[in-house]
Length: 292
Image (cartoon, rainbow, N blue to C red):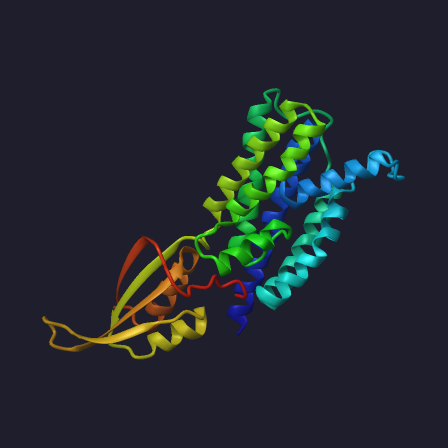
């Protein structure tokens, strides 16, 4: 029990680190260049623009994007509560609060870090996408379209988080094209593409792996089901060399669960034989485990 608690604490801390990386990218690369992030963060930026337009009293030098971002997440928290698991929701709420604070209080450079805007958006987008993917990979999210993307990843296995972001970003950058200059729109879109690509590389929920396990230990199957909440198919085999009965088990997991499978199997049978097949296309009831 203590070990399981330590793993969860470790995953939570790494999830917060991912939120910090995203916030750092927002403050260091986007804000100094007056660019737009896309997704719910971009929507928050647009709302802040509208508040300025109607002369809403905003203190000088204060960026309300983080606070608006938190408010917009409230209905998405409800979606997560009913469809993505309570533990996932609680971690997400904590991560969103932390991310909102970082976006509000992290220092913003007075000028862009790089004179080349293309270099800025590629580095910034990659940093942001890696941060988001890291948070998702370790069982949490930064809210916003992460929640929608995780919902789609659970209900529609071939629909990735990055694709959801790109779809919504189209509407955000349509606003940029209509109200800002074309340079801002293009560089903001490049940032979003770099972020989405890095996100899908860091987030392993969409990569499936088939694992075959050959062992004479009966308890391996129940252990995999209990620890990973994955289905296991078992049939009996026969070792032609040893003439001993063997159990052959097959399970399909996401890529980030592979290490757990190996640890569980080898803790029970150090001599178990495993074969691993990837990449794998899955059709059927394969759920993304979000409530780990």
